[in-house]
Image 1 (cartoon, rainbow, N blue to C red):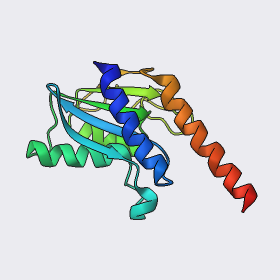
Image 2: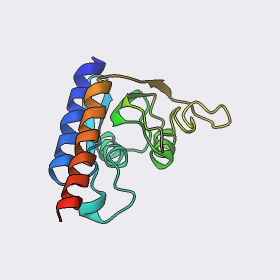
Image 3: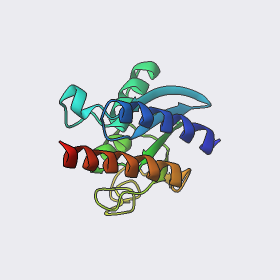
Length: 153
């Protein structure tokens, strides 16, 4: 099932790509039902907090009727940053499934691991490498395209 939901997160990432946003997508699932979807919208909304995970969590909270997202899994194409990891902990998401890791700003094991920190009152299970190549490829293609457009313009 992890691959199925990661494919849906990749579809969200493609939406971001098509808008000129960094192509990251996220899906929140509770007992087999998608309760939140999101993709990066920082440029469109001019909002530094408009990350895919934050948007998916906000929509999941709306659908769930509260801020506690217990019994949920977040599928995200790229490892969450510290801000998104904080939101994951605060919303009590049980597990995060990650496509590709982010060695520059990842907070689920690459740079730091906030989700497994025993100092917090909640820890989140982490699964990595689900459709890793696809998640990594869309990011590489996006940044290659961005670099090419800058050299031509």
